[in-house]
Length: 519
Image 1 (cartoon, rainbow, N blue to C red):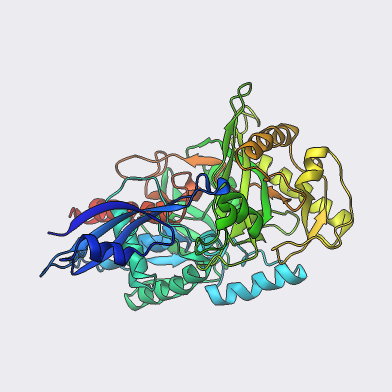
Image 2 (cartoon, rainbow, N blue to C red):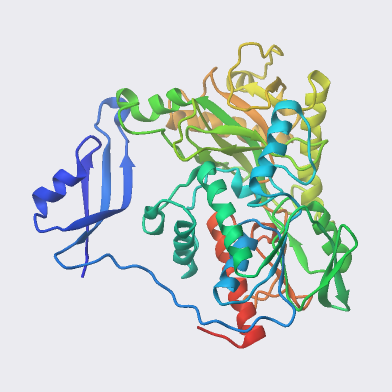
């Protein structure tokens, strides 16, 4: 049997030398987790890595997770999966493993064509309603840090990691804790995944939007496409992501059971990467430690609201990621190497359903998000072209001042910035909590409040504004038969891995209810 060990080394000590010295009979090894402890680095304390290692003895092999998939008959009418993000693709993938083809409908284009549309938007402001950072093959996860971290506990997490490796992710993705692919590697493997689905008999329809569901009473029996075509099925998987506002309104009109949910809004905070590296690593910055990360949180004792960092992108970029021509949204992304000259993170404040927006209107949270996004666009239009992202230096924000001249300010965003007072875009309670929390964050990370830091707004799409209710066992809508809400847009996931796992769970539920199959 393989042996697992844990030990700690200075950051510049060689792992293999240590293992050969302490475990001379070792035949091979693999690193399961490598956690950096840089506390005290600013005071000269040497950063150290804690390793979790799996060792092989003589004649042993690493255990490989290999699943067998009995081939089942196709469904009478193939399942219809709306959306080709992580949830939809992994639902289709799991069904295809068992020989069950599906129909995947994606309103946007293939990833490589989608990139061309997005580049035109970032550089020239040419917005495409169907091909943007949220819509198109791969979904919003295609433009992210590519972190596969998840807190969920599910036997399908390993399956998701294995399949990522099958389609081109680094081999260690299958066994290392907290793997990171970066946006560039995610984009490369999504194309291979789609091609595999097509080879297995799946129909993937790009540039095709589902405009409505076909119902008989409280039963969903099919979909209507934007060209008027109708498709019918006994299983419709709704994996449209957290930004498909038209679908939320359509579900409300149909009486699909949903409820408001909490989310968070705020800004992207961007520092020069070397500044964050220096804050975290002191004199050790740049010495084989890579781009520094941070994680910050503060709960206001009066309001009990949390302000926290989210989706930290060391060595990354800030992107314009809206889905409407007259609205601005920002998000963060980094590539596998994390070698950009900037580091950014969302800094967001909790928004409570029914308290911070109208409890009597189901989609009031959606209106709350859109209102902020439209203010940001209007601020950009007032001083620039509407393409540039509203931004304010952190020092200016803390001092309640604004120098409207953005000349000479460096930033990672390809869209450019327009100097804007954050308090004119974000609700007062959000900016007040940000201001209070930033003081605390600077206590933890000395130098965090810097005139070199930028606040770029608004970060509004942290999660869906509603939860689409579903049965915990069957995953089916509690109000409408044959409808399977899936992933982040349905309020049941929060990230690439959890959305993918959610898609797998729905696939397994369909196999059970439609075929009576249980592995």
